[in-house]
Image (tube, rainbow, N blue to C red; front, side, top):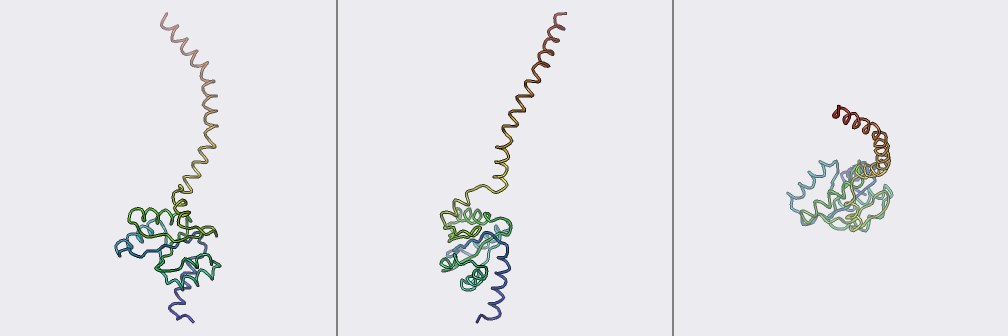
Length: 174
């Protein structure tokens, strides 16, 4: 039976996990306090939550949400990282920070109910943001229409340009 303090930690973790579609586990062992503080600051700036919770308590919080795929990865020092707004933002922040500082090591993640290993998370982190992807799709859809309208405009402008040029020629000769 968990103590009241541990029960509060489990309930707080369960509350934070409500509605989250991406959960990342990171091994932060070997990080200095300064680097861990810098990582927490970067997470806060991006609207990402980073928490260090005992593995047994984290396992109980996950299991209460029906998440059992991460149980095997709850070994050693573990930080749980997630964003209520974007499921891929934590992957970008953790990967970018790890490139620069060699830590933390991403253990695993669950995004939209699917388990990702560290290699798949690196691929996920390299994807552009949702807004960029939407703008690329929109640009692809709009490009043919823009070219068509430019061709129609040029075709309509040609007689007017020719008439203008003819009038200038006539005014020069007169």
